[in-house]
Image 1 (cartoon, rainbow, N blue to C red):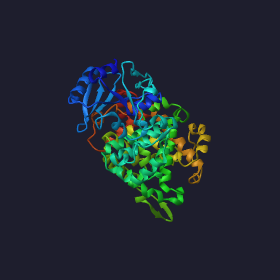
Image 2 (image 1 turned 180 degrees about the horizontal axis):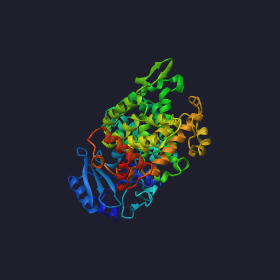
Image 3 (image 1 turned 90 degrees about the horizontal axis):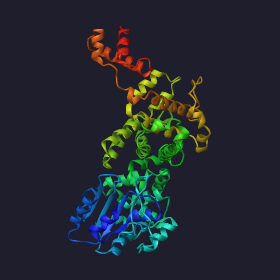
Image 4 (image 1 turned 135 degrees about the horizontal axis):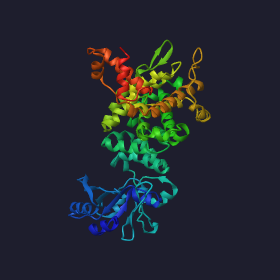
Length: 494
């Protein structure tokens, strides 16, 4: 399908603008096509006509400003956002945009064609720099790898741009100009004003960066992180004696850094990573969980027998995280995932504290966590890995695959690399066993309570549940695989 020809047949004159043009200049594939066109009385009808030509759905993103989105129904699923020039002409339209690298335009001609990028499923376009309309110096800033504001008022006009500055810089690995960072610090509180789903989307796209923790740290340095998440502000002065300067917040950002590291090095840390991946949640969702995993440590901090403790912070953290995610308009599935693994993030460590890790203990762990098992293990991996340096983690990488040995008499030294190694060996064991047993498929029971009642002629009661768990444990251990074997095992439990 020739997208350019279809656009020109409807609108006659159209310009590629925004991130699509920026990425085209950088020779990067892009998924969304942003178009600006001359205003017209029948603009809405034209947008609908273009949608029919492209076999796309068409709906308004902003009816007041006549912004329409077209989403293709068939591959390649082109997503086109189209709107008339703001201010009635192209130049004022570009001058009211956010950053100079987004304030360029390229007039579409029949010679320009969007090609599908097979690797990403997005599009590529060969953009002639000489033909680019660039009133704000975007090409120069692209070459310098700088994020600069088009004007001083970009954040007051649309506070979502506060997040977008960091998201774009993270995606391109660009520097944010000092003047922009100064403006962010001054106007960070505005981040609560726009529709929070827009803020959420910018944040989650930032988490797609392999160095998301670095950008979160920069956001914090300039006041945006705690403006967005006020509950994190108290972390900075909590448990400074334990975590050092920066307190719990320092630990939080380090956990995000470790989960960044894990996802960039899955084959090195999880030899069966291809099998593990099918059970993992989206990396950006797990990074968000890492950011909030200790959100309740400050309100739960208390001195107990001369030691700072945080009893109940995981359960209370799940409640706090749920409220944060509701405010940001996350989906119910994402809220359940994040709140569940935050609320149980100490369980793997509690299991690892046992002298030996029995099949029964692993079975109960998997049964309790169900589909959240592997996402929880990934969060716990990052949490424990944060207690050793990057160099120590690299040195112990191969030993992480070794089976965890029995605990020595008296246990392991508190907060030591040896303890971290042992705990992470347990986590790797849980990863391997969960995948090997393929708990997603094995979780289906071979028999139910009625089968036990009928076979053993028992009355309903707690005993039925106890027998079902024994059968399920046998199934987990691979000792029974069929319904007939399960019924035979029940008969032996009289």
